[in-house]
Amino acid sequence: MLSTALPDLAAWTNYLRDAPIPVLSDTAAEIASLAAAEAADGQVDARTLAEAITGDPLMTIKVLADSARRRSPGQVTDAESVTAAVMLMGLKRFFVNYAELESVEQRLASIPGALEGMKRVVARSHRASRFALGFAVHRMEADAAVIHEAALLHDIAELLLWCHAPTLALEVRILQMADQKLRSAAVQKVVLNVRLDQLEQSLMQAWQLPELLVELTSEGPCNPLHAPQRRMVQLAVRLARHSADGWTDAALPDDIHDVSQMLGLSHGATQRLVRNIDL
Image 1 (cartoon, rainbow, N blue to C red):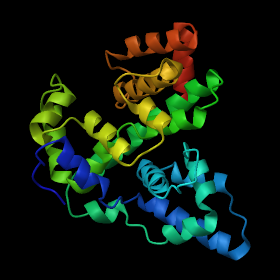
Image 2 (spheres, helix red, strand yellow):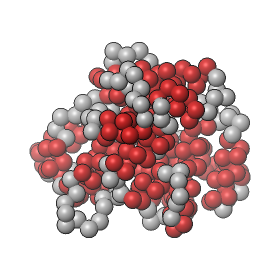
Image 3 (tube, rainbow, N blue to C red):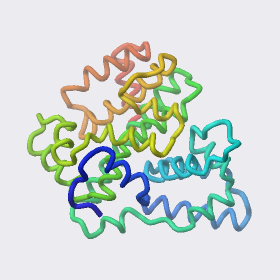
């Protein structure tokens, strides 16, 4: 594990691009159970397996990155979703490839506060993905699965930081908690020599993830055709961040206003929708 910050974006990207990605212990156990069920009666399907994978942002990025890495020369389309990646890989090959999965709980067990910090990010990622999916379903988006995964993976660089440099992740968190007026990007730059949003994009490009997934998680220039989908992801992430500790944050009225404008709903209807999604 890293205890000293790497010098720049390129160094962080090179390090994390090839670093092993641990997964949640519940995910490892569920995949092992599905592997046993498939071996016993062959009743597991790609959708069931994808649901287990997307319950964990770490396992999700692991599968999508591996799928991109193993893309065959004759493959003309990217696997934009986990379900597509599983179908392209095949169940038998999947269970062979992921027969041994390191758990993040084991990895961080000896570092006080690290597992709690990592799980806070996981919980926030799940909430963002649920909001994004709810918005996509309301708008009847054809790319709802990719929108869901883009929100789930929006903070993947922060999760990988907890996995591979937990003492640095703790330092960032302590500084932010000590002075909540400090901007996250500024703290990250001081402690890590890099902003996590830039690292996330650099990693996604290094892994050669599908273009749509990369674009929906980016803060940079956007294809106008994908602007509404990206807006859904951005607002879902904002809403999840600002409501992480309850619905009293001063930024939430602006978030609800922006969501209501995007969905064409009244302020009250939007509040009811997001609260129902969050149940």
